[in-house]
Length: 353
Image 1 (cartoon, helix red, strand yellow):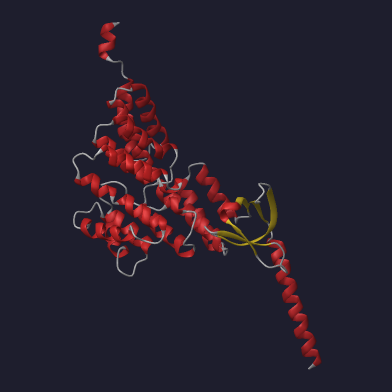
Image 2 (image 1 turned 45 degrees about the vertical axis):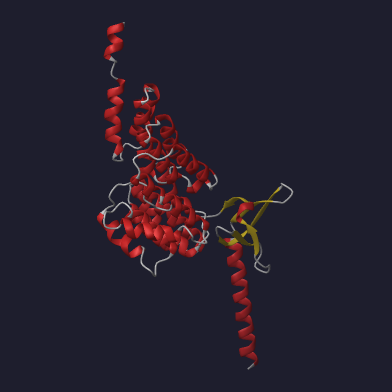
């Protein structure tokens, strides 16, 4: 009995020592926090979780977890798996297919919830790079399921155009707006069904309900999605209403503004207010580039409007931007044709020389 007790105690101590060693060995996380007085306080330890609300850090195994508001977090440094590191480097160099494969492998290797969400966010970025909205949705929803207040909301894959969605998106969007679906899934589904003829009415009804959601991000995004219906149902919107939209957007956090500025650009374009439309469209490629295909189209639309307005120099610059930055998107070839046409000598100018 004594021997068993000693063995049990020894095992218990070994377990504690092992746990302490593990925490110590993995305590590579470094967090820089802003203090109330303005000074910055660096800490090292083990990040238990990092959400849209707070970061949870354990300095030592024997100490309780410390919690700091996300708004106070200046910088977070951690060690990633080799697959994760390679994925980030490949994405930065524009090798998206290889990057996507590395992130897939990294997800299998990673246990930390907050890092898994980061990997999923990177997979969303890979999907959005190639206009794979279905793939982006399938990876974005689990992020929010894991952290409702996620700071990755700028990646939410909504539709802001009147283009017909791909068949797989159309089919699944009807499931996403079902009665048992989460508010986020219903928002995404409604955004894609809104441009489908036999889904517009249902999508509009869903968005009107979501416009009263307690979650302010879903509420605001749903309200801005409803602008698409106003734009489509009006021959020409009142300029005061469009200006009101702009003020509405300016009160939002930056990551939620991109798609709304695209709709605002379309509204000014409808009124033939070319410079105002171009300014709204340019917000996407200059500030919000998460949805790369939408940014590409916005840049092309801005170039078109400036060309119509007679600002040939700026139009040429923007068409070239689409060609060199977004050449693999559907608007690359169109931009190249317009770019080449504008660079041709003006025949009227040639005659006057």
